[in-house]
Length: 131
Image 1 (cartoon, rainbow, N blue to C red):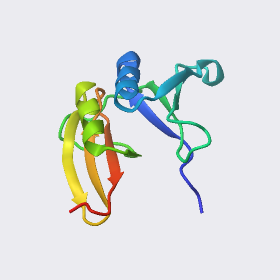
Image 2: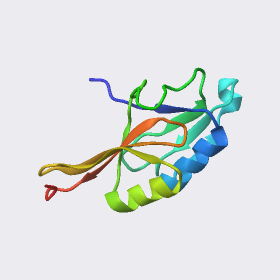
Image 3: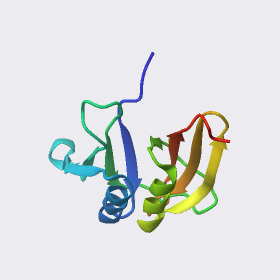
Image 4: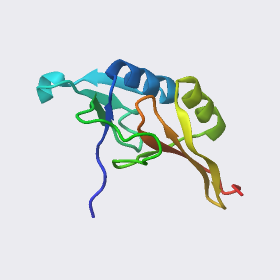
C-alpha cells in the first residue's frame, strides 16, 4: 500500500502564502531552491518524531481557478486540536470559509477553507461527541 509522503501548495504570492500558513498553523519554511534549481520552500508542519508529513510551497505555474469553480488539485485536510480556535486563526490570517464546520456524527468536526491564494484545504478535529 502506498502512503502520501509529501504535499505541495502553489501560490501567487510566496510571502503572502508563507505568512498565511505560519499564522494559521504555526508552520515554518526552509528555502530548498538550491536543491530544486527554482524557487521552492520546504514546509515544516511539526516535529519529525510525530505523525504527519511535510510539504513544499512554490510559485503557481498557471492561474488558479476562479471563485466558485472548485478545487483544481488534491485537497489536504489538516488535523487540529481545537476547531474553533483554528478557524479564528485562519480567518484572522486572511482565509475564507469555503464549506462551514460540519459534524461528522460520532467522529469529528470538518470544514473547508480558502487560503489567501485561493487554494482549498480542510481542517478536522476528532470528536466522538460531534453531532
